[in-house]
Image 1 (cartoon, rainbow, N blue to C red):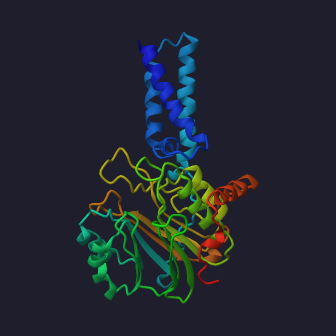
Image 2 (cartoon, rainbow, N blue to C red; image 1 turned 180 degrees about the vertical axis):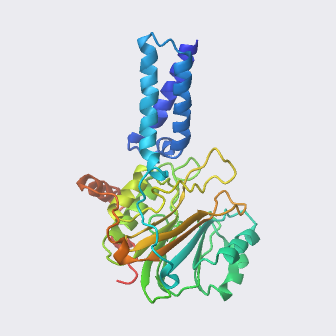
Image 3 (cartoon, rainbow, N blue to C red; image 1 turned 45 degrees about the vertical axis):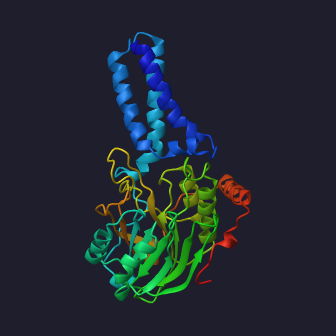
Length: 361
């Protein structure tokens, strides 16, 4: 009975681990990209139970231990870069440089959430240069209007479909544009932000729809949006930031593909998970809110902020423009297979990197 039970659990862990290697975009497959930390924990516990309760004189027992250990190793391959034991991908900022620092607070507010005072308090406390809100509708726009005295540069797209988006900035925004890159009701925002030093940074705010039984059956729409934005910024030699709720975890194949083809860096590598979703369930959390940047930047700080009543925690990231100091930071390497995969995804939806605005060019 113990053998049968452990056989079932081992098979379940193995399926959950290796099914995502299949590139099928259906949500039932892609959903296993998310809980890798949780599955790794279960695999480790399973190995301990196997060693304690199986008859290790039997070859089948060692086969089960091997499968569970292989599953654990595979999960760790994906998630270990987001722990302190991994080398940091982004350097720490060498010194304070207020005129070249850019602080961005990203917050998926959850449309029906009505705790706007909590977000306003965080803005007052941390004084970000830019606040970007996701899932913000007209009610949220009205509540956040008080920020415009100190953050007068705005981009607004209030929607009641969970994909509204707002940007409030203390710093000048140039060539601002709202686009619907892949889906007609899912916006993205693009602009140049002018730092206090006068330097300009190309910035993209995105929030593609996730694969789920209540949204898109497949991840294709999300994947294509990430791919065309990644291919677009790869052509730029200027400072670039891409941020928002990607509805994808940091370690997924799609986000890794985005990082490879864009050449952007992830400041969480070597520092931690900074899991922002789900705020209400401690054991079911993973990093959905992201900020990626070109090698022009180094990191001053990255912080997950307290809950504002949403299902996402806000994320505050401070980066410093230091192109000379950061020039030897190395992004993930891409290859011809990655580039081919990116082209195939874009062609599947008839999308192109030319669809993405190129502010500053």
